[in-house]
Length: 265
Image 1 (cartoon, rainbow, N blue to C red):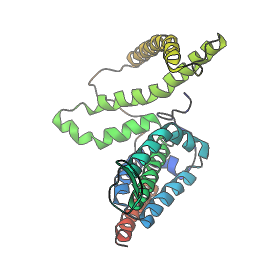
Image 2: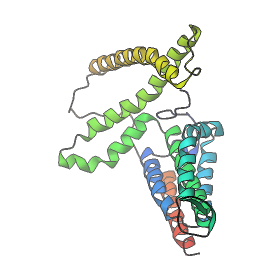
Image 3: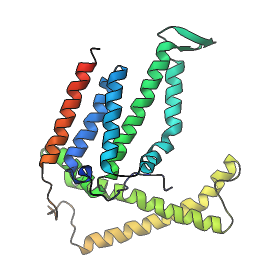
Image 4: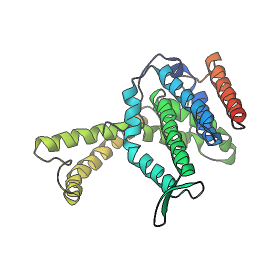
């Protein structure tokens, strides 16, 4: 359960930690989009180096980024194998029935692996260096124009913030329950598949009850602080752009230009 990094924030004093969450959100979103501009080894190398540089700038241990990749290893392998076996173009190197491996299929599967890992790493950089409240504020700013269409932007941001904050809380509660079950002689990591499914039920029931208790406590705390649905709210910390955020967006613009240039070679 501790491998889940959604909603987790690692405090730090790095430049990326100090960046405005709006700039980090825009950079992360556009980076994921421009990954699809890559079409050769040089473009993928530039993207990978950019992502690796971002990881180093966070000053966060590499083990946290590995924890972000590890739960998705099987998904990455499945996607790569499908890309390898079902890419029809290129010189056929190996064939069994309708399955075949081509030289272009090998290259495209490697590209796919780099693409997925890079997306995961960049997303992990964003979540580890940005608090759930900052993420919600950044998304609220991004979708603010929808307010003129009578969309409850503030409520959407609040729900998102609570959801992001609840994920690590529920994971911690699940870990406590699992450890308590192990102390009583029940280990969900042992036994056959059906037995593991049966052992999950004694975990889900107390976890569900605990989540309702946490939600009730949160509702009472919000009411005690004067929260009312639909009412405007002030902020303790105001978002502000700084020179480091301009440099962040400028580096992304340079990256896009470099990719467009390298695509021709």
